[in-house]
Length: 53
Figure 1: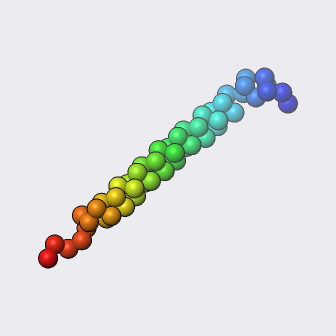
Figure 2: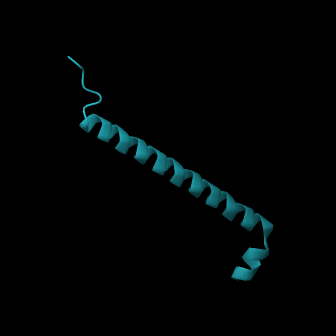
Figure 3: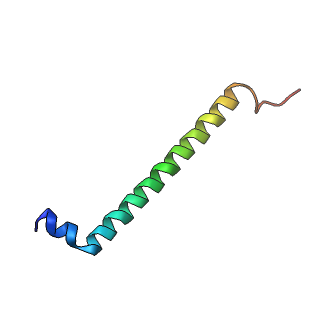
């Protein structure tokens, strides 16, 4: 099979676009979770979570 035959097959194109969407969603979730973790770490190190006595 050649690349041209794969490009002409609509089910292959749909499958590739589905994997691309899943990859983008996974990358967005990873960035979101990492930024939240960094924010929590900075807040913790700044003493925002320590009890005020």
